[in-house]
Image (cartoon, rainbow, N blue to C red):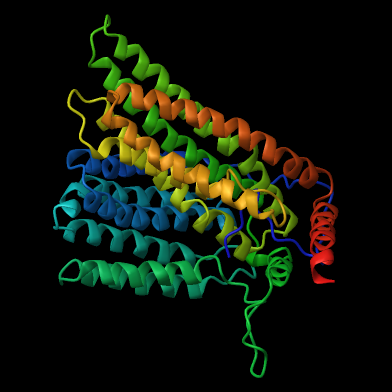
Length: 437
């Protein structure tokens, strides 16, 4: 179940320890920031692959490459979250060693686009061997990560085999699904026992599980560190959009009006996307994870899965803006931008409201997302820089709307999250009681 900042299925009784406020966990290590530089280069190559041949099949290939890089990055983020320490030389060396195969994979991304992914796959196998060794390395007492280590060995074998046999993508899918299963979903509190009902649990029951602290404290994630880690990665992806705008603008003469329009519109759009995430969504995610005591399943829902499409959307937007600022932009340029923006808005739950919204709120949300996609039709009557300007204005308007929707959610979670969730559930019951009678 993927949770969102605005659409919260609530519970009436939650057995959690809210603590005295937000957690103040470890800081992001300097070596992690260095590691991110390599990934900036890698994801930049993926975005460049879309620009080099702007077709939807190319974008689908980029999605697959990004998913592979995404789970690789998450592997190191979770590793350092649970056991990393900048004062330990071994922890720093594992991260630095991981930059080498990741850098090789970045240089080979264009070959993967062209149907020759052997070196890319071999590099991905190598980085998983490093992750397997890192999880086997002695850490603090009571922290047994042998299962994760064996999982990465299997994943490395699948990537290694894919480097020499056809049907590469099928093996990659199996490897990534395995990593998604063992990396963060280690606390099986919600597992069914023999004889129990097979009916799907209600949203209230699902949230009751997600908001409970893990039975094994060693499985808990540091909410402050993880929130900052993903926030920094989103900043780096936004930086790809800023660089795209600046680079395209430098190629225009200074007296060209479209030079200034493109520059301003691109920066306004990037600022709006920043505001949509960091003004409320990032804080709500961290608060919920802190409330759960670092529940790994909630971290999986909010971050590993919940951030995937918004993160890729930023690359798609950057590619679309880049293409739109060419002298002869292709038809796909505007569609990449609007589809990317729609993915970002849907992934960050911009138009969602707390509790169970009325039917017209759901219709309005769907209409707003559909309108975002359809802005690409403006490319038939307007020049590309003008289309980017309109999309930027639309992004600002959605930011204003989202600020109003999320204000009550953020304030409620900040004061007393459990009481806030109970209050929404009681309001939902009052709405449905007349119809039930």
